Length: 296
Image (cartoon, one colour):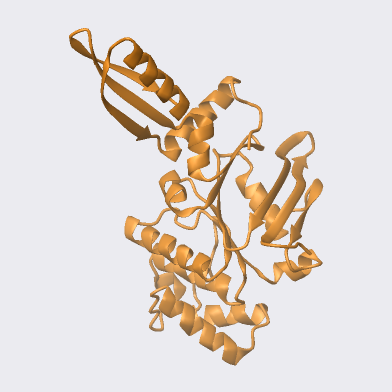
């Protein structure tokens, strides 16, 4: 059992297939009510990590410890999981499908009925007696989200929940996930859409070739990875010049240097690079062998 505000803790968690290491030892704590984004290129170890957390894979080394539970079996009953590919029973009616899974979760039928109606309303799902085969892709994704919530889990693991969806549905699902956090639930969220990750997540874990490349809020990642650029606009020698700085300290030094040589500071522009820009640079550098060591 974990103390304090920690929902789950990973201690030296790793996974290998023979000589191939899919996930190098990872130690990490996830807080209650936090949305943790997990990103990385294909083959980085994201899905391996999520499957280790759900118990679908056994670690080669290390362990996962859940707050409030003494065994993984107990923890699994308080976990909602949506894999990237989540086939549905096409010929079932939506409500019958949800009742079926509520029964598998051990939810009494009267309680299940109330929860199904609650989540159908929250997700703006109006099945109206439709079979799952008749639903759009966005509606199907909402059904899988409703399914993941029937047993009222406190931890949700969503692997690419907005993949292939139109912008309107994607935005609705992201707002819905924010609402789950406001209820105190913990969400681990994997996505290739880095704009969504940047907007949604409290912290971000970047994996590359099974290694942790960075971990922290976007603001901290920018500070560590040079994600902020300052442009100093100067008037000197009868013309206008520009100088750039990557840290507040470097900016201050450049301003002092400019003033010392008689230049006039006209303006300072601050530009923040997106998570996608930083991520692409990190992955490229890792492939070139310049930043292959784990960070964070």
